[in-house]
Amino acid sequence: MIKESYKQIIKSVKDQSRVKGLTHRFYTYPAGFSPKFVSSAIENLTKKGDVVLDPFMGGGTSVVEGMRLGRKTIGVDLNYISFFVSKVKTTILKPEQKEFIEKWIIQFDKKLKNKIVLDKFTKKALNLINYKGLGKGQIYRLKQILCGCSYFLKNLKKVKNKKVNNFLKLLILRSMQSTLHNRRPICEFETFKQKIKSNCLDMLDGMNELEINVKLNSSKKILRSSAIYNKCASKSLSNKNLKDRKTKLIITSPPYPGINVYYGTWQIHGRRNTSLPYLILGMKQPVNRSVLNFQYPKNKDLRIYFETMEKVFSKLYKASNKKTLLMQLVAFNKLDGAFDMYLKTMKKCGFEEIKLNGRKRIWRTVPNRSWQATHAKGELSSSKEVLLLHKANGITR
Ligand SMILES: C[S@@+](CC[C@H](N)C(=O)[O-])C[C@H]1O[C@@H](n2cnc3c(N)ncnc32)[C@H](O)[C@@H]1O
Image (cartoon, rainbow, N blue to C red):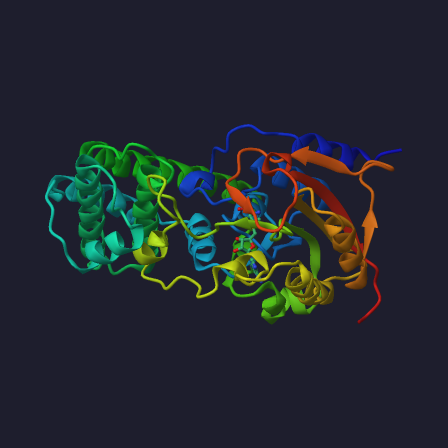
């Protein structure tokens, strides 16, 4: 007999509806979870006040849903973009801070003029994009938009409140992403201006919706004990709740074996990937980008992937107790042996598999994701994700 709670989760994992609501659309992070799946897993496997961990939080879907449902959520990610986005998505603003943002945007919109001044930021950005070969009109529009972004960032320096400043910084990051990433042709300057305003209103609405839900479901104490970290998942134990093995559920989607996902870059007009988002956030991009995929650039096999996986999951085991459940969605290409190796590594780290559906595992086709197979022999279009549930076997290691 399949447990009713598992049935609910299995149903939700098949959901492919558009991501909407709360603060979920503040930024489009690659390979994001469906909020419906995450909330079903959290609701069916934990109670209010329980500790829920996502050690590879990405766009922060699980931390937002955990927070909404009144759980103590802990999110970790090595990528600064993930950390920044998740932090803003889970920071409730005061009414006066939201009013300030609304007014600031109206003022900014009046000041923002369509002119090209190639300052330090714009020159750096153009260097990163490698726009050569684009038509004159496209280059002109690109420059206008980059100058608009630079002007936004200059004005932002005067906003001293950190929470408000971060919210606005995410607003420009989102607006630049929705204007430039995977879009052709490059839009008119006016469209970019409109996007800043409409994204701002959408974000404030999302923030209000989250606040209402949090108030319904959580106490202040829970919010205080929730946390977000920018570090390697193997270092999560610095959090007291994790060190004390209080974790009830680990819900996550780790890097995928043999699949290279661009977690921190954008593609502009078919050019090679650019690290423009890091420049907007004023951060350096990781020297080795493959590190976010548990890899090294020239590595031709999956040895480093599984070594890193073992290092991280043995630490996650240390954050677990006998009742801790670990639910994950992992994607695989047609890569001989990788899935078996994945299961073996989980076992080696102390986790025992629970089959959600009696005998069979739940596989689903990966919806609409941009990634690249690095070592796979199979077709990209054949990428499939598997839903896995494990429990910690209780042996202290
Ligand atoms: C598949 S994504 C997670 C997506 C997430 N479920 C969401 O809803 O957006 C995997 C994440 O793992 C992160 N990552 C890679 N190596 C890591 C490490 N050693 N420690 C923590 N995070 C890491 C990547 O930066 C990426 O954000």
